[in-house]
Image 1 (cartoon, rainbow, N blue to C red):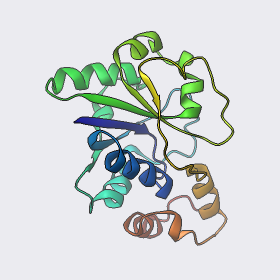
Image 2: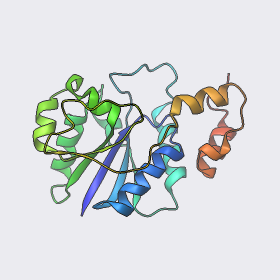
Image 3: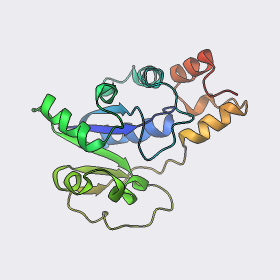
Image 4: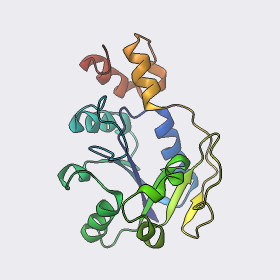
Length: 191
């Protein structure tokens, strides 16, 4: 059984992330799933990004009641910016007895050619891809190491969550209760 690596900013983590992760461990071949909180995705803006350890705390609170999930801050101590290929090399060296499987959204698969060492990643790494509405099949969809999973569509985004909170909306049911309470308590994403 493998360990799934679900990389992301998780700014913040929400029920869409958790539903996909839950689906992967309960219906897939994963023994566990690690949410790898990325300090800063080199392909994304950093403006609205909460500090690393606050996002790590939100993830920890969101998943603490489910034993098959783990929050990982492994990228916090690696050189910046974070590149998935470097993190995977580090994890494979640190945990030689684990089989890691990369998890990504179909939108990320579309832009995989912009990732550092993407050819090596495709060659060496099994990749589970969850579907995104409206994504057109690209050149990596048929790669032997890429598996499109039959997970439910999730049309919730972290930017939607941030904007809604910023606009004073009560969207508590889009987040796990403990994560929502922490975000409220800390006044995150408010004007």
